[in-house]
Length: 333
Ligand code: MEV
Image (cartoon, rainbow, N blue to C red; front, side, top):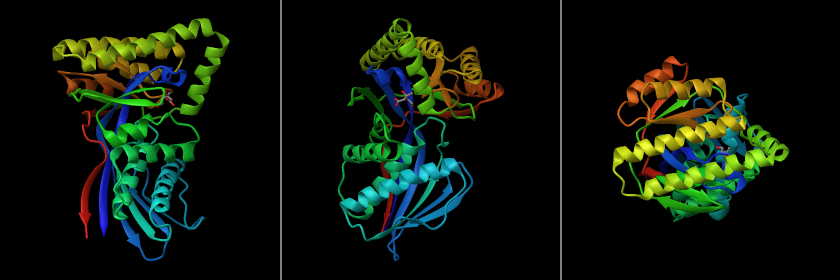
């Protein structure tokens, strides 16, 4: 039997960094996907083939705790530890002795802040659990994905695997998730081509916060209020154009506050301003900053905004919100 599953990338729409201080955040799944094909193998090992994960192709295989072959590519190796952990968690629930081969292809750039690790973990859990005949809900798969993140990276809010498993819009506050109603949001993601270290950026904001809490606290409070206003807009019946305009204004304010915290870069701000100049109603960093991605809300002119991002030196991705999270694409006997 072979199972093919896919899971989407995500963008944090509002609330990165302030979420670390107990404020809310809103994230959404986008229609860039990671595909994982899973089947049993004869030799009892975990075998991972990563043919196209936006780093040169490689094959790695593990048996017990031995690694047969490992790649030099740091980023790819990091992705593979999520895959391996995901397979092991499912095997523990089902049958630890059975060998599993998974093969991965992905449209999501690794290390860009678009949740590539969570997507690969969720698609792997989805494919492998189905292979073993386990009946898991998307919520349960999201929770297992969070467990994988905790095991691999030590700390995680769980927002990425939850969004990737469930799809659509998720409001997150203090470990509680709320699904917001689905709507089309015409966005363009702009990748700077480099990645910042989330760990270092979070630590840098923490230092500034500790050194001058009376200055930083009001910024974080404002970011929390932006999220609540955005949630209200996503829940309201307001006319579409007015909703986009209002969300765009909130994005611009949120970007300014993130810049004030020191997590923007020259390149990120260039992409943000290029998008706004080309007619986006709003543009901001998405994720930890220091490189990675920005996104723009462009209801009428996605392709002009994408061109502006390209001219400013970024990699544009015209994308849509993905209503669907984890998807079982194909089951072959
Ligand atoms: C990174 O995608 C988002 C941050 O808020 C960190 C976190 O929530 O753990 C910067």
